[in-house]
Amino acid sequence: MITIRHDGCILCVGCSSVCPVNAIELVGTRMEHFPAKCIDCGLCVKGCPANVITLFKGVKSSKDLPVNAKYG
Figure 1 (tube, rainbow, N blue to C red):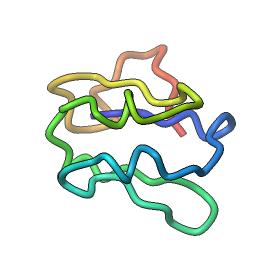
Figure 2: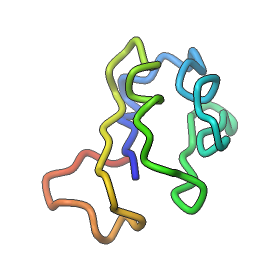
Figure 3: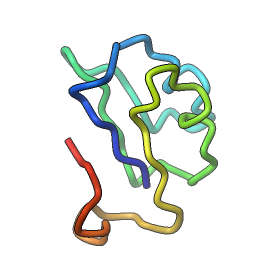
Figure 4: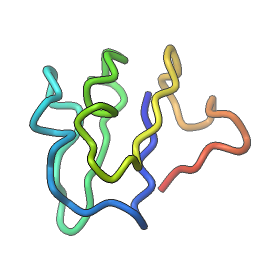
């Protein structure tokens, strides 16, 4: 699972353009992540020029994120 720090996102869609399973999409005015689709490949992290995406391998739900994880 990834988290996207939306306050730093520049909406370039670089992350969604490299995602092989379409787990990230532009919805309205923010990039949204769909954990059920995510395969933890990390390509979105590499494709983000603003460095606002963090990968948590093996995590499939926001309730399982570390307490200090930036989410939303």
